[in-house]
Amino acid sequence: MTNIIVAFSRQEDARNIKNIVTRNGFQVVAVCTSGSQAINSLEELNSGIVISGYRFEDMMFQDILDCMPEGFEMLLVASASRLGGQAPPGAVYLPMPLKVHDLISTLEMMCRSQDRRKRQLRRRPAQRSSEDRRVIQEAKDLLMERNNMTEGEAHRYIQKCSMVSGTNLVETAQMVISLINV
Image 1 (cartoon, rainbow, N blue to C red):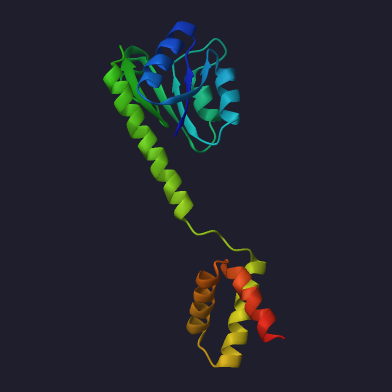
Image 2: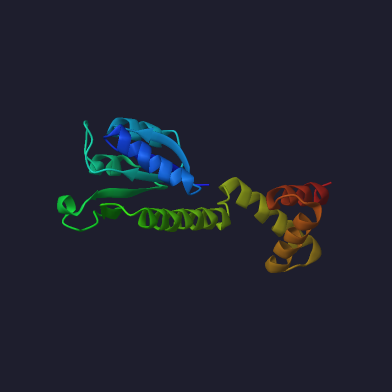
């Protein structure tokens, strides 16, 4: 579930947006009435969406946008006259007066986008350290020397043993090294 922070200078506006969002199945983790509160809330989370107004007592929406860590997106709700109808770079923009349907559909789109990004990051293979690469290469070299395998065959052998035993590739390579060097 995507974390949502609602940040508007007027408490009543923030509460109304929060109620609309939660009634439609989203999780609001923080309601803020100042830019500094919003930034503090950002620092406690890894990712999410900030639904923000244009101006706060202590800063403008752009200041929050500049402080947002990677993994966060901003949905800016402001009158068209303030922005000239143009979305600011780095934020999704909804003009006032706000239509509930537009808010919810935009939020759903942004949540799907964040979920897709998270899945892609999880699918990316972990980078191996130089020590791990050295252990795997040493195991392959031993298999190639001892069993007259090609490098590809040795690598597939270690992969297959890894899958059968339910251990990761590095642990399997370490087992191969220890068994051959006995």
